Image (cartoon, rainbow, N blue to C red; front, top):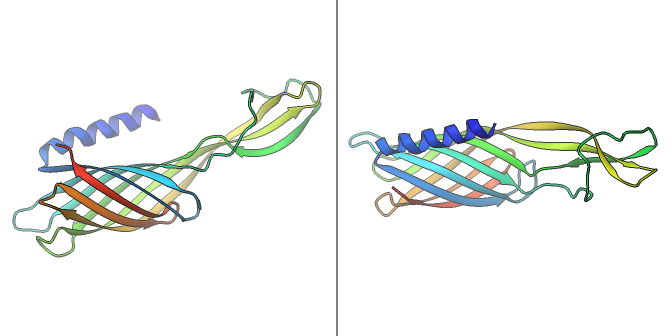
Length: 184
C-alpha cells in the first residue's frame, strides 16, 4: 500500500511540471461520520487555460485523529492458552484517507473553483484479550475497515495563482478548511 501511495505522489509531482501552477495545501477540520479532528495535505494542480475555464486537480492525504488507547505491551499474536478474557475491540491506528479531487472554474478568469471529491479511508482494529494467568495483553484478531468518501468543495486562487484557500465538506471527515501556496 505504501509503495502505491509513493508512486501516486511521484506521478503527481512529475506531472505537475507540465502545468504552470502546482500548489501544496494544508488544512484541517472536523465533523462527518468520523466525528473527530483531521489534518489534510493536498497537492493541487491548476490547469490554466488561456481562453477557456481553468481546471482544478488535487490529491489529498488526510489523517483522522481517532485512534483508541490500547494497553502497553500489546502482543501481536493470540493468547497461547484458553484462560483469558476479551477486553474489547479497539482501533489500533489513526484513520488515513486518500482522496482525489476534480473541479472547474465557475466564472471564467475569476479563479473561483467548484469541485467534487471521492476516495476512501482505512484503519486497523484489533480484538484484545487479557490472560488471566499472566495479565499480558494479546491481539486475538485484527481487521482493516474501509469507508467511502464523497463530497463537494469550493476553492479560490489568490494573488496570480500563488496561493489558494478552500473549504469542502464530505461524508466522512466533515468540514475541511485549508490554505495552499505555490512551490514550483
